[in-house]
Image (cartoon, rainbow, N blue to C red; front, side, top):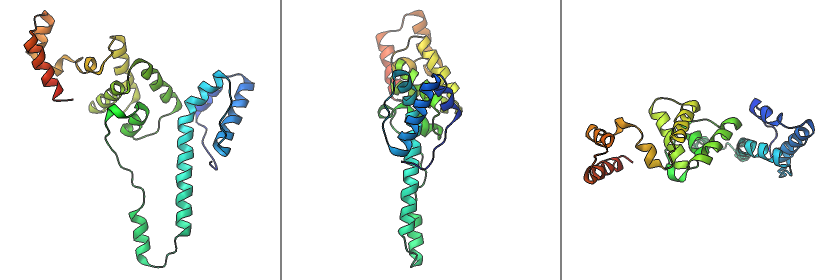
Length: 212
């Protein structure tokens, strides 16, 4: 449970897609979920919108819980000796950026870690669409590619994803082979002429595997 939470404009834009009665029901369900931990019972349209909001709402609940536990812990501490303050500093949470294996990380969490921010409901919905096209490892590779090119905008990642979808790519291997500049000149020329030998193809695949 929380003492307060924020309603962002993105929440409002999603909620106002409903009828006035459905809006009232959904808003009441959200407040009960946040303040009383009551799971909502909603119709299909309301449920779809609630599911888009649930992740950021849960983050608010988790942050509020950590803050409350921290305050309770600090209240219980008795400042008898100087070393107690040092001890408190030792156990404070320190933000740490961790690079994780893209094969075991869902794209929502991976993007939040790499972009160092929380996703908005609209962004969450956009990534949900990508996941209907591609697996997480492909989306996370697009996120990596975005960062390597010096960008931290979701629009840049979206352009990459849309390009792969338009080209009909299905596997991570196809996405990694997309750019000709990633391959030696002799390989590009041979592929274009459709005369690459099995030995040359195997040589190229071995070379690319070294950089996975």
